[in-house]
Amino acid sequence: MAKKVMKIEPVRQKVLQELRPKKRVCAYCRVSTDSNKQHTSYVAQVEYYKSFIEKREEWEFIGIFADEARSGTQVKKRDEFIRMMKECENGNIDIIITKSVTRFARNTIDSIEAIRKLKSLGITVYFEKENINTMSEQSEQMLTILSSLAQGESENISTNSRWGIQKRFIDGTFRLPSVAFGYNRDDEGELNINENEAAIVQRIFHEYLSGKGVYAIARDLTEDNVPTIRSAEKWNDNVINQIIKNPIYEGDLILQKTYTTDGLPFTRKTNRGERPQFLIRDNHEPIITREQGEMVREIYEYRRNQMGMDYKGKYQNRYEFSSKIICKECDGIFRRQKIYIGEPFEKVQWSCKTHIENSKICKTKPIREDIIKDAYLAMWNKLVSNYTFILTPLLESLKNLRTNKEQEVEIEKLNNKIMELTEQSHILSRVVQKGYMDSAIFIEKQNAINIEIEETKKKRNSLLDSNGFEKEIAGTEQILEIIRYNPDLLDDYDENLFTNTVDKVLIGSDRTITFRLINNLELTEYTDKGGEIDNAKSYAARI
Image (tube, rainbow, N blue to C red; front, side, top):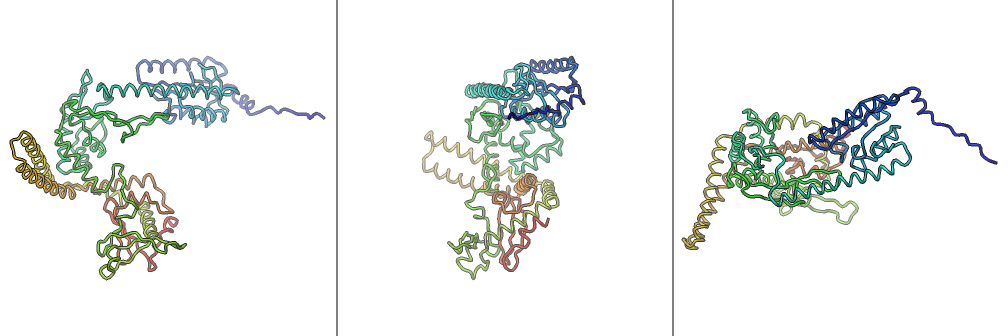
């Protein structure tokens, strides 16, 4: 017996048609560059689609969503595209018209995801050039192919562009897209000194060599109303850092300090050895001497080493507690030990080296690793809960502290002496090479100069350590940045967080655990008689 099947027609579109007899239509336009030719294309597209939509009686013109000078390789960089998608989600659009698949997106994944989302909302996208309506059954397969071709085209263009840039790097004919502060570019692309800006650059180097930190330099430039780079509101310590580390001010040019990734989505990254770099020495007139540049780099590295940081800003130790746990009673370093080895209740503890060797000299008993972790967990949650009352005022106070002017003068004198002694060493080397001095006399004089340089550097570094609160400011800003990105209270200990925020852990014989953070701020947690941390794991839940 044949089954009787009745087809039930969909009613949603029919009802919507009755409620809204006209389709609400918009257009999406995009141009990829800032050239005058493309700008004309952008304006023409806007005018064309406005007229095209208004001519259709069954269509209601909603508007034009147009991204000017935006790349099609990443949807997230196109503000108007994102706004259009939100309007679709709010039910304000029925049809989107665009010129072609490449105008819509050149990233296959983004393109297909957007189209599928629009189809689920009952919204049609019509591509004029390809004559594709996304509501047709064959549309997705065709769009996948076309989007892939568009993505491949975009990647090929990027590859060819990178090849051309690499060739100009090798030839030495590459023109910087933007000129460094302190320089202008003439009609032939050569760098010339901007006298007004160069004076500011020289001031920055001079003050840094005098012992001022980048924060103090930026603050003083702002207070003195010195014109900023690219009309910024105030001078920033990061800008000062970039200036003092840039070899361009010594007359050299380093190319490919950043690079763009090969595949979509294209992202720009700092070149840390992934790509070759190209150095052009004596490319242009310098603003500072090479000796000054070398001295600045030496001070910069010294300060970073004093903070115990590697190039990525992370501390280097085998275990997160290695060399960090110090005994308050004898200043001894704690060693890692395992107890109850092989048992189900095996534990790791840390013991003072002095106590291990002679418990009569140091009475600080070993402490379990899990207790230290619980103490850190409690301390961190309290800090996160109260950082606006602790860290923010602390940072402001540190930045407002004036640098000792006498120290600045003394540091400058010592730097000048180091440069003079270094020049004497170079002269001695040239004299002995030409045979004007006996080797034995040369070695004696050279050793004397080296010793004097070493002692002078020690004096200078000692002054640097007590000048400018560089470590405290940098550490406080780093902790604040970590909290901003991790504002939630923790339920469990985080090794990476500990490594990046704690400088030392001070253990007292009274079972107190004090964390000296990377900004030298000390926060103490107390254990109960059994050695457990009060409120360690319950603090987060209670807050």
